[in-house]
Image 1 (cartoon, helix red, strand yellow):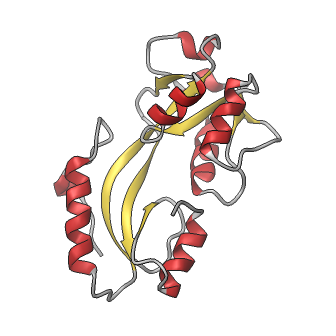
Image 2 (cartoon, one colour):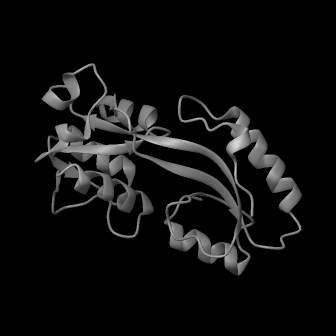
Length: 183
């Protein structure tokens, strides 16, 4: 089930979910977790947008005064992308998307550019015909983790699951296993 962080944490607390995949930058409360990987952000534009036609990694300064589309309030990715875009002096458009598919279709329609998590970029950008550019160092990112209730009897199995996901995680956002964190 895909949902907002707050809803997933509530479902964990209520016992209707055993675990969830979340970004640690969001408020996740008092749960156990295993870090899986860093998920870098990428810039997504229409193919003809000047910000998308360059081959070099995008620098934050290139977003100065750009019209950026973000997710609606309540999405933790919105908060993370907004912090990055604000520091780059980009300006957020007044209308927002309720999901990543809606967001990329708004960009494809010419409403602006957006920031996507790299993990979602291949599917979402291809679906909407967008160009994707990596960001230059320091690369904005989110930290993905598997989270579950404290004292869950499933903790040993969830730690093994997290280890398997961590080993299989694709790309440069991969985090070395020795850098994982445990609570």
